[in-house]
Image 1 (spheres, rainbow, N blue to C red):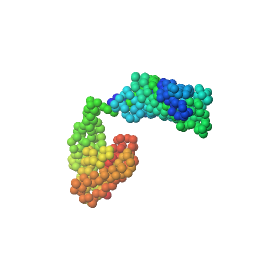
Image 2: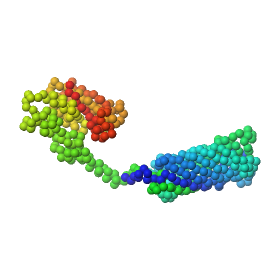
Image 3: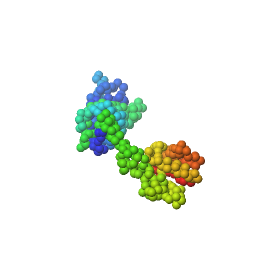
Image 4: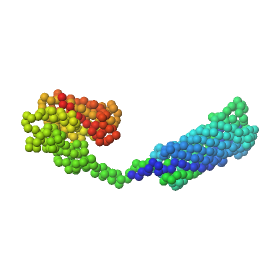
Length: 409
């Protein structure tokens, strides 16, 4: 799939805009501003932390004038604002249907000044603070330039004069006009993208989540190849370190044939897999020379007999299910022996969930042994939760933790 490195997008841009304004309130009775007053411009420097969020510092200036056939006024203004920016197009995944149109949201606060040029308060410099918020639509022209259209609303705080400059603070018990002093702007402009990356954060797509049919087919084919088990030992080829295991052999988690008692005879050919013996006796010791229980218990204590599970599963993996058969056969030959089934889980996931999962794993082995004819009074099971003795950062170690062990009583 198509992806780009984290640093392969530009973060800086310069935004230049110009257009119209509208003074809403306060205005002295009888004074009106035009619906669209041409005379606003702003310049901003924007930095995107990532493809979704950023910040910008911008400066705006302009002039409010009177509506035709209304009392005359002319008031200059400027503002400076620090704003947060949200790339709404990326947040809403617009790239799923267009990669040329985008939408930014912005909001912040700053300072400003109102300076009437006419009427009673001509040349009075009225400093205030303000809040601003707006939406910016974008049309991508190239990897370096986009066309922008913005609508913003500004609320001034502690404004002392009307926008027409005819009514000062305190007249008619008005006091400060903010935060009821409201005006807005509408602009068209251009963003110039800076940097050496192939694209800007405005248009960056972290990953192509929508693969083509051909890509999906190739990926499915690769997964099928990985899951092939050529020697049918229950371990897929990509994990199998012994690719030609004999049929019926008991293997470990890497597909290697096991010899639990170390007598040189593989378990599947050894009639006494947990008691060493010569090949002439099919791996069993001479009669009356050793107790099988002792060797079986040693094999248990040394961790040779376990049933293993896949992640978040209570179904034994194929290669380890034969361990249940060995234990069941041992119990049949030794009617005075009982066994506890001890379930474990790795450390991934919530602790309470892992405790329940470990018990389900032990219960699954219990059910198999009961079905094999073992008297259930000789078998107990218990979940022990997480095995914290392994390195949870190692996939191989976590596989060893997902198991059921046996303890001879």
